[in-house]
Length: 166
Image 1 (cartoon, rainbow, N blue to C red):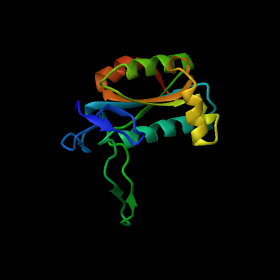
Image 2: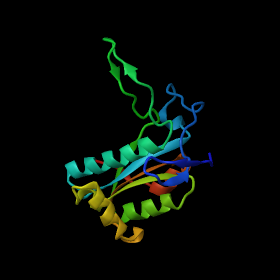
Image 3: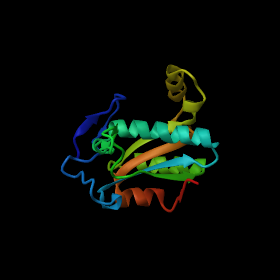
């Protein structure tokens, strides 16, 4: 998939996602062509770590077509919104490793990358967050989380053997 996609953020990037023909909700997650991981700063308190992971996941889910599976209907007929059918692994790393992982993923045309700079948790107004990010160079930013979707082998090479978040 090499067409250009305009994400909700207005940032143009190569389309990374699943076509409708690829979605197989009966297959194990390891069978999916693409892998989704989120790497979170292991030094963050639990609440901040969860917040960073959720923010990265939200941006990713909105921008990567085909991640969300169909709704599940329970025995009472109640609908439960679709979850990521191909799974999502949450990993932990130190800040320097997250920066390295983000750089490798962002340098790959095969990967979609969403990140949560520290400014996201140190501002209370979204425009202030954007202004803060605008003053920092990418290489100097501190990241609390990075979300990556890409070909399974490529993502595995980028994240190496990082541990699952505890």
